[in-house]
Image (cartoon, rainbow, N blue to C red; front, top):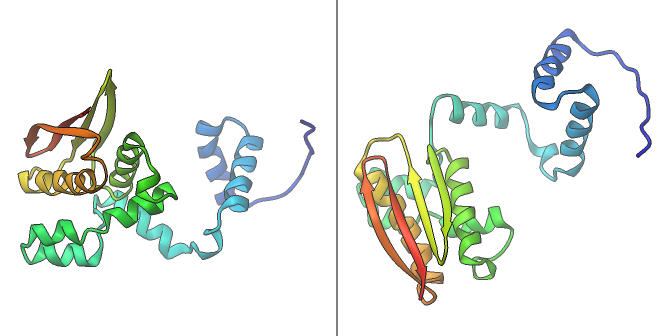
Length: 187
């Protein structure tokens, strides 16, 4: 691919940021190409403002988690069953995967749940491990609460029972104050 040379001037602050980014992207060309790709391809670039970036940093830096208002209300009222039903997990998985859940393979669903719980800062560690004909789903959080583990397990069960229980069996291996482990096997 033919490269085009450009020359420009930037502020000291931008130069400092570029020097930081070089640790990951190695060259100025790589940084510029990645930044342009993000700006050009993102449908949301125009709507992302400083407050949105502040919110993302706030959640990450202060270790907050995100949840829907109805889910939060039910949790605050102590109604965990309603919290699971009103969690909007189905809508969130559809949003992340860009597909209806019925069009996802079971492994794709689990991968999207992993991605979702990482994005919402619910999981410290979450993974899907394929072991022959079995799938092991491990969820770990740092909230030190068996009820948090159970709520997330019930969210996973909600999706499983609605969409995949006819093709897979679900065996809960462990539930602790820091998470759970579930094994799925084909019927």
